[in-house]
Length: 255
Image 1 (cartoon, rainbow, N blue to C red):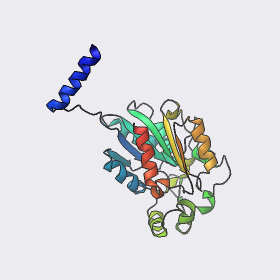
Image 2: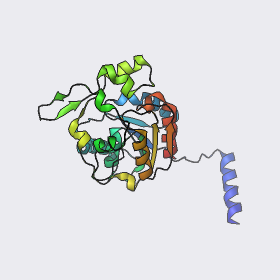
Image 3: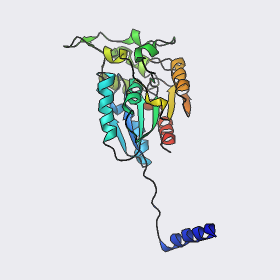
Image 4: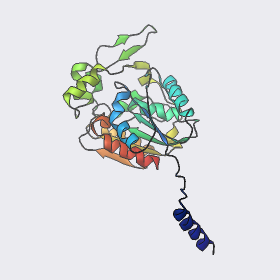
């Protein structure tokens, strides 16, 4: 009896012009990593916006895990409704911290990203498995007034190290506009990570020269990734070279 009444109500509503409200899509917050900036998400943002998602590509300061995560946490806390939090490279460590205490974060997406456990640093994980060549590609460090140093990739080596599957002209622009990161940010230990309580998804390229694919696979497995996508031949900036694959996984995590 109940099923017949419910069905009749639905049919009546359809023919009377009543529209049932659809749940609002979550907001996607994108967090870039070291040696990149918010524009590295442009291709992904374009796809997500076309598919009806509100998107914020945060400007990650790249000063320290704690302060960067606090900044991103403030952005997430200002959003009314569910959030999919996405991090690239060092940005993965930032979102692992920033999601803590923000109950509106429904999922985490790691894009060629670090997912440290408590007590681990990005530098620890980068050197855990062989294959990474970032150290050989760094430019001369810049000494800061507080005694820390800023690290960046030598522009002449940027294409081959960071973005070998991106056209050379595009990679040259990325190299000139790269955001440096402090050495202390890369060596700062993580606290308890959000991926232990929040569902996670991972995507990375098997030709990543910053974080070896073996390390990325290890972190995805450890975090209990709901779906891990490995893009054949993709570089560290898989979101630049393969924006559709990255956007597809983000939308999967948003369901």
